[in-house]
Image (cartoon, rainbow, N blue to C red; front, side, top):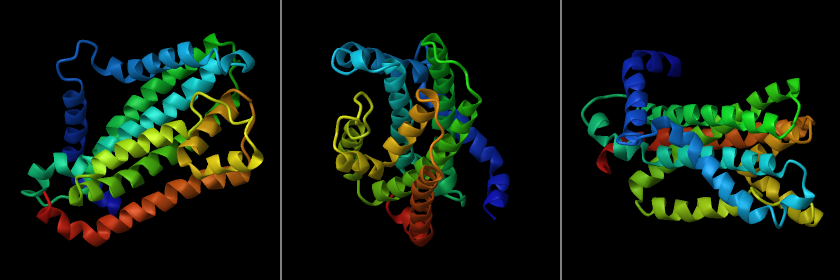
Length: 256
């Protein structure tokens, strides 16, 4: 049923994705290159600041930070964009009867394309840093898909909340800042106690970041339990988001 609706509204969906790209990079000289430059510039600043504290004793520290930035930037961009999906497109769905999740999905696709472009830069850095190519790298498709599903689910939740409560944006800004510091983007957790290390796995963003690091830096495959944890976070958030949309869909028109 979902695929049938997407097929029916394919033209609108494609136009929304194109519009999101044009709107985001309108009047910029570098255009889509900014999607790759933003995490690179952040990585540069972090490398200058934190290498003195953590990088000297860690092999491939730049890649360690890049993996963290890569996942976190995508998570932040996708969920922030998803949060505004309904509000930004109120002029369309208040006049035309279309599934409202199409607006969220179009935002997600736009962010996902930027993410894939940045992954290319990530692997260029991996090669420069002397990490040999491994067929294990193809396993990264799994956390990428899980992260995509997770971001769509969280976007469904946030877009509904933002429609009902405009304070959601300010609260979520604080939340993402907290997530950044609790995702071990620029510091290792090895020196922490076992109990504190386990607490990090309550953070889905850290779980997906750590999958990247395990494959690329440590050349190891996460356990079956770890794969199930990745899927659990993605599916539970998607189910919650889908439930909220299904239950409150009829109310959306009254809050725009």
